[in-house]
Amino acid sequence: MKVFRRNLIGVTHPPLAEEIKTNPIHVQIRDVHKSYGDHHVLRGVSLDIYRGKTNLVIGPSGSGKSVLMRQLIRLEKPDSGEIWVNGVDFARLEGLDLAARRRTFGMVFQMSALFDSMTVFDNVAFPLREHTNFPRKEIRTRVMERLQGLGIAEASHKMPAELSGGMQKRVAVARAMILESEILIYDEPTTGLDPITTEMVDDLITEAEDMFGVTSVVISHDMASVVRIADYLNFLHDGQIAASGTPQQLLQTDHPATAEFIRASRITLE
Image (cartoon, rainbow, N blue to C red):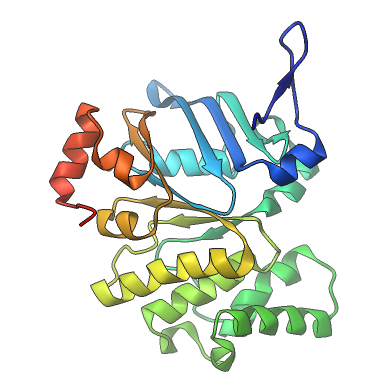
């Protein structure tokens, strides 16, 4: 299904509301460029993010993965290009309109990035206290429902230092989702974790999708995790998407840089 409609002179229009609800593509990124001085990091990135699926952006260090993430959630404004989310071009938004629509995204930071001086409850409640006028009772209800859904309600009074790495990641996901975000972005979610905890985090990503119907965007170089959880892969190389597809398709790619990256990871689907 097409995301954009065009009139006879080729002018792009946002999709109709009914098209948004049924369209399998949640986000369309088209020809996005970003430079810092003379350093051209993103060189015309185009990719689709599929609704309710796990979408991976992989690539070597320095390929522009984190820069792309910052453009997606509009922490930075692209130099040019379009970022269509639910029929709205985020690349054009400014001010209060941007601030309101940015809630579409929830961010799960690398190493969870919890506030170490706050309890689990207060970490998850923080976005509600900052961005809503909900009364205390409503905040408590929403936070406890989210913690219960992720199986960590009994830890609501604990401090982050008292939790395992896997439990901290669950708290981070609860916080990212507390404003009813549709799209969760995970920044290198398994960095620094042992293999068992890494697998638990992989399971958490798919669990959040299944339970809450969110779309996942995972920035990663952990190819073992990629193969376990990815529905769609996008390989970023030299500031462009060099290859896209299912894990099976990318493992069989003949694109030189993509094939070399996968070969070096020693990953198969067996």
